[in-house]
Image (cartoon, rainbow, N blue to C red; front, side, top):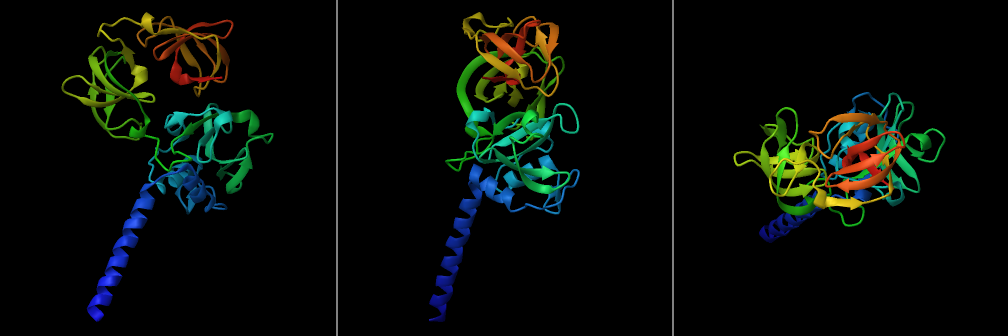
Length: 308
């Protein structure tokens, strides 16, 4: 009898552990919010990454880590994670960013919880909930990113973000060697480099990243350093990819965005447009757009535009 009792207990423990592991592996926006809200009142600590004390990006990274999503530290790094979300489409668990708090550019972030509120770490109050509509935060709102799915409990930050399969050629247009990473995020480790001017095969695209190969090195690079061209030549903007636009967009870079004479990193810089400026999008060329703010006209990377 004792033997059967031991077997029953062992089976129960096995299925309990299996269930916990499965639930822990799932990541949802609401799960991130629930985790974040547990830490209200935790004191602010510059560079803090644990429940003994958080700064803003450390708090965001911790909450997402408990749901199985690894994020880099620092608002400047987190603002490039996942996919961009317009303010009108915010969902619980999205990361919201603010600029011009203690320095220019993106300088603060938190986790959206719904009803125009977000939970974040305040230097004066620690982890707290604030309204995005109040007089302090409203004019400082910058942008939002989605790295967890609020409805289906699936991570969105890495390979789930495949936008298309590809067999295109591209030229690396970075001035020096381009870092190749193990995954589509700045938080992934550098595994090699590819020299500027090298032609690579583009295997897949992930938001602002691409999986590429030059025959000896394979990994992920930022799309901003690739001049896409299906026939493998080194032309600038592919005219066949031009689409007329006419819509408006906001510059979301943390500082001034370089404006170039053509749709490629190899084209010369002809001016700059300040972050936060509203521009008219005249045409789109692959990952570039021809824009104008009324005084400056030229090409900027689409990664710096929040389309309205």
